[in-house]
Each structure stands twice: as structure tokens, then as C-alpha cells.
Image (cartoon, rainbow over all chains, first blue to last red; front, side, top):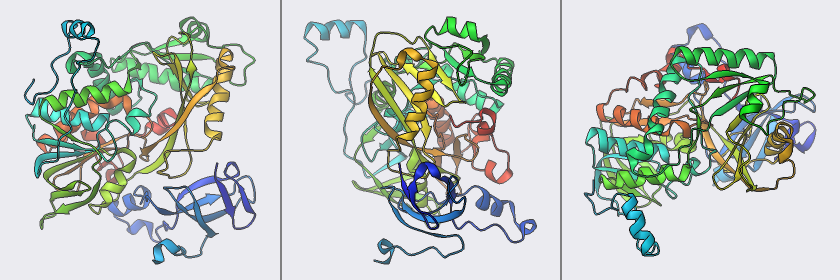
Length: 96
Length: 423
């Protein structure tokens, strides 16, 4: 079971959280202007990264708030978690 | 069929002869060749689906200059990790056609491959625990019968008669109100499926190249695929079929493509071996438990996926615990059994829980993926329709509804909503 760091409550066990899928997929600002291909991209296409993955979590059985996290999908180890609206941090692995 | 010096056909006579010589003279069943400079077609992934694709390319389309590349060992991914359930009782017509096509191939597969895949149509029982389940499963029964697929409704008492260890007492947390039974459903030996296809395709001239990880896809100026860079050198190919299950997104990213896929760990576990006790496959979508008994006597239990994207081939303990709680309530006699092994496989899940068998925007690149948590049952059918798609550069009629185009047109085949569960 993952130990997940909620930016508001601290480290808690995974069963308190629900996964929210890939982070930083912005809702279209003008939905009626989107082509079918752009809808496909927004609704269905995912990076499904093997490596550091930016994802949403919700502390359902705690504060109830959404936040984002970076996690390595090979080791399942969290790099960091951050508040919704903050930009995606650049982890050390990606700086090198 | 013996064009490459591969093993001779199995028969009662070869069995007797080898028994008489103490089983010391069985030959290798397939070669371990060095990769050639190039091939007509290269399949990425030597699991059941990839090997089946290569087999039908060689057998039905005369394309024998084929290599199957595998980064690990043959059948070592989800083919060797799944719980081997075979059934075709899906809801939508497109799925019914595809899975029933596969089920019909299973029925003759041991004969076709001259290899015993131990297909055992012992019946798949899907339990209903509430009124909604009853409605959903009855709808499946009727839809299947209209499509000519066997499926029947059993009362709780009839379900218990078919599967005696099942608990149908009314005071359970999730009482059994009835069940849908597909008698032709069952299980097969997963390793034997990979080995049987490997042996049969090798005999037709297919090169199976293990420990060969694809690192990059080289493209021609017109965008078409040209070659693969692998850990065993550059391999040229005009046609590339990607059958890489959980790693499909990784391979397709090498061609600059994003797919509607997310990869999750799916866990399974087996108990210690006991005498025959469970005569069929029992599934419960509502309380998420899948169980059957292997020929070795182990109870084979399938659990749910973990909730997060991962490539780790392992998952959290609370997932199998949840499943085992359900199993213990359905089968109180199993409570004292010890579980021997627990593992995870990485499954590629689509938004509508239906597979993708498709051409791609890149000429010469084809993809067969998104089988999610239930691909094993489709192995022969998946390989056959994907081989036809690669050979003719046109989707096989059964594969056409499962193209990538459905995520643009919106014509999804929503088995997730139909079953309310990943399968």
C-alpha cells in the first residue's frame, strides 16, 4: 500500500485516497470550438508514462481535497505532492 | 509442417517412443535464432496474442518472413500471469462477435496447434447479488441467446447444484440471488497456449527472438515505418505489429503516438493444492472475485486492479484481501486455505474497456492492445483478426469496430458500463 503525502494533512495510507488520473489536462476554455480530434485528445488520450508521472489524487477519507503528485510509475515511489493550480515541479531526475 | 528442422508432430506413437526411452530424448520445441537483418513483418511482444498473430500470418496469409520480438522471455508477461478464464458472454454485438469467434477457435485449438492447451469448458458461473445484478445478467443472457451464444439463467438453488461448495444462505452480506451460466466457458493452460503457438509458428518459419527490447522506431521520409532499433541490433521491417500489452504506450510513443490507454497493476493469487472441489469457474463482478481450480489443485483467484497507473508488476495487499473476504463468504470451506503466491501483471485499459485492434496514422504500424483485464480469452481470435489486418492493410470485419477511430467518432463499445466492472 502506498504512503501518500497530502499537502494539507501529511502522510496517510493509500486507502484514504482516490486516484484522479493524469494531472494538468486542462478543460477546454471554448468547448464548442473544439474539433473531434481535439475532443479525442482531451477525453481519451493519456501519456501513460513509464517514469515520473504527474497525477491527481483526492484525500476522500480525510480533508476531501484534490491535489497533484509526481510519482515514478516503475517504482511507485512518490517524488513530491503539490497543490492544485501550482505548476508541475521539475524533479531532480529531469534536471540532470 | 517441418520446414526448419523443428520438432516432429506429437502423436500417441511419439509419446510411447519417448516413454520407452525415459523421456530423455524430447527435442527442443522451437529454435532460438539470431535476428536477421530484416523481415517482412515484425511483431513486438511474444505473449499469446503476439505469437498467435505470427502464427496466423504464416499459416493463413503466407507471410512467413516474420519475427516476434520479446524483451523478456516468451509468455512471461500477462500470458503467464492471468487467471485463464475463457468466455464470450459479452453484451454488445461487436464484442459478442469477436469473443465468440475466439471461443470457437479455442474449441479446436489443441488439434490446430498439435499441442494440448488443456482447454476445459467446465462452465463459467457469474453471480448476481442484488436486483440490479439480476437485471444486468438476465439482459446479458437474452442478448447472448439472440446472438446464438449459449448463456442461461440459474436460480440460486440451481447454481448451488451446479457448484456445490457455493454458499447461498440468505444471511450473507451479499446473498446469491441467481447466476448466469455459460457452459462452453472455462479455462485453458496459459503457458501451453504460448508454447503451442510458439512451436507451431516456429515450424512455419517464424523467428522468435527473446531478450530483445525495442528502443526506437525508425521512419522513412514519408513517415512509414522502416526499422526497429533493439538491444540486439537494428531490424528492418515494413510492417510492425505492436502487441505489447501494458507497455503499448511506451512503444507507440517511439512513433510519436499517444493512445487512449492507461496501465494498471492487476493482481492474482493461488492457494495451496487441494483435491478437486470447485467444478467450474465462479465470477462475481459485484464483490469482485474470480475463482477456479487448476488441474494441479490450486485455487486460482483473480483480484481487482490497483487504482493508479503503474508499471511495477506488483500492487497493494488490500486489493487481494478485499477479494479473499468475498471468496471466504461465498465459499466458507475455503477459509482455512493458505495462499501460496501473489503477483501482479500490468494491464492496458481503454476508456470503454474494449480492445483496440487497428491500423494507426503511421503507415506500416499496427496495434493490438487495450485488452485490459480480460485478454486471455480472446488470444486465438485476437491473433487471427490482427494477422488479417496486417496482411491486407485493411481491418478484418470483426476488428473494424475496434479501431482507434472509435475514439474520434465517439462510437465506443462500452463494456465497462455494460458489466459495471473491468473484466
